[in-house]
Image 1 (cartoon, helix red, strand yellow):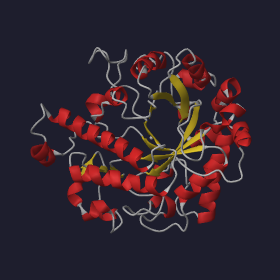
Image 2 (tube, one colour):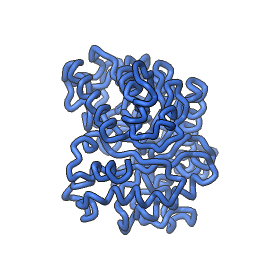
Image 3 (tube, rainbow, N blue to C red):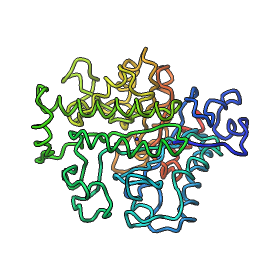
Image 4 (cartoon, rainbow, N blue to C red):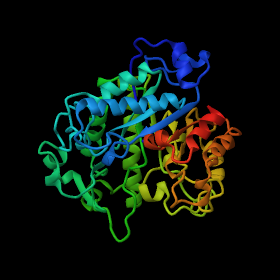
Length: 402
């Protein structure tokens, strides 16, 4: 599942553009003070050029123009936060001291694009009164398994023992302490260099299960797993160490920056664990991704949690109307802010259930959450759909709620 300055922009103007009352305009000051107003966010995914840049190899001016257009779209939709993916595959959309330039920019991993996308994003977002949350993927290395296709300077090529091929992709091995230290260092390089408003992670920790395949961390488990009841408990501890370590280090570097995570929307089903939700999801983050998202909230390791509640009201296996109250109960009393991740990309997709063909479905989500004060806002996936708005679902949200 992020940061900057506000030159030439008044608080009153920011309030108008983001749809906030003038009295709330100071809620996202350039010194990084955490937001107190409603989250109205959108993700901009860069992996595989999903949202931006529209294709690799554009000129620096073209890339910049497209990025600014996304920020202007956020303003026009009365949003106040953009969550920009800046480390999609163990690479960087800023001049990193640790990892090569991302291939999504030039088409060649490691090639300098001739400008600083993250620095520009922070500056231009803040100029528009928007928060900029830097979105990092901790462990994904490549959407293929060939180390020789990585830039010669890539850390995974220099340390091939760090990488695990699985499901047609390459991942760093979370079971190695040196990997956990390195990926934190690589992400914190951006936090050190830019006034980001938040560090944001999505749902990828250990990879999603692939039928018939196993994630080969045997050697690491042999070396480090002896004190645990089983491999799953050891893997969860590895993920916990990453989250706890990053939470501590972000605050040490930039005390007012937030740390937020956007996990898959189901922690565990109630049939698996009585503390779980009334769902029948095929994936459970605790069991399958080895991510104890509920515990991270209860221990207050995160400033906000933004579960991807990518199902419609009444969906049998994972009903939005059942997951919202479950997550509200999880955050109650913790001080952790709860934002709902919304599947705008499903609106108007003919492959989706009938509910997603109704332009009012997403607006009903926001209406439903009004009865749960723990829900402090919503984030929409993703930037392309916020702009294109295939069936007018986003316009309906804006008209009804913003």
